[in-house]
Length: 502
Image (cartoon, rainbow, N blue to C red; front, top):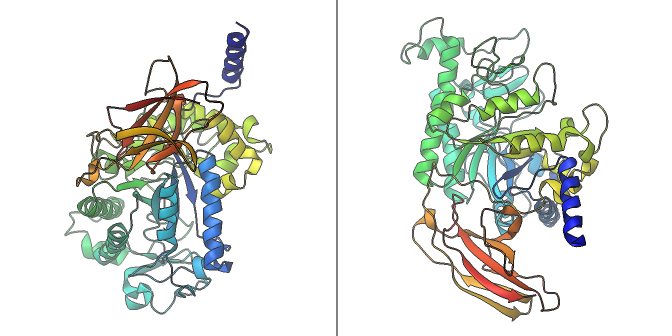
């Protein structure tokens, strides 16, 4: 009786503190930017490998199940590209190859998958430089075709209106997807550049050259610009699906699509709009099935006068248009809120709980992941102890494939050099979409009803075909259940279970 009372009081306190139960399925991403990150250029190969291993270990411990890593910050490469020069953020000077031949993206993909974390290759499509003083290496595509580019606000961009620009960017994406085992291609909010007051983006000659053939009149320049981005997104989607249908295409747009004053169906906000100012019609892309997820950057505070987080998260929940919606969360703005608060006292947990109550919001992505790894304002502690208290599967992509993989075979419990271990075998298949990519392990009490919808029973997910159980004194009986999960995160319907004494 006392034990039951203690548990009940704990649960009441847990609810009172405002923490919602860690769900079975939830996207838990972390952005890792390379732009403006000087630490990498000072590292040797072994130092960088050790850094990445420790970084991923820390993120894994906090429940992160997807890493969004910036592999193309400024039309250069944080990987061994066949089309673009090595990034200055990797070696210190654009075009300079590493002293020892190796590929950081290949290493990161392998290490992420070891931890059963997804790897999303993050590309900035149009940006070429980040400042007016930046020097482009002689091999850069800018020097070969300077007519493809526009200078604006002291920076250089691909001209989105040129078919040549689109073709080149598509080739970059195809190169990555064909050569690397990425789980997704990711683009953020930078399409046409953010407006610079008093300066016009110089694409008038391009508009005049292409508007008629594309069916636009003289006064439809904004629509023409949007169509340029639409074409790129549509073709990148088609390119990805032709190469590897299971690879997703995700967009992280600016958090305001349109304000209500511009469109009665817009949000009750007042701020820059991704549709009108960046010419990114992300809602159309979702409606047309050209993207697999949207990750709007809802960085504002709850109650913000111009862009209230509560208003925006509900707006995106109502406008998911058949694709996954994950919320881009700003750690700094959620934690501080002007009051220098720790994670447990701030808006951070309130925002996560708000997303979990909304039907069409299926997870979060945190800007930026280095803050989690460094446990700034105790954010990692908050994730480990409360928000991500149990592992979580990424929501399944039924728009790509909804067929469930076969169940595992030959589940056994035996002693190994690692300890008392569950082992099993994969069922092999030539169908890439049905491959058993990873496994989900549940633990139930001996006489407890098996309920695979209860995410609190998940003890681990793994790409290995074994799991070392926490052995105690060999007197308490448990039931372990193992399921297989495929590339689109469909879980096998039939589970295999084993009773053990621990």
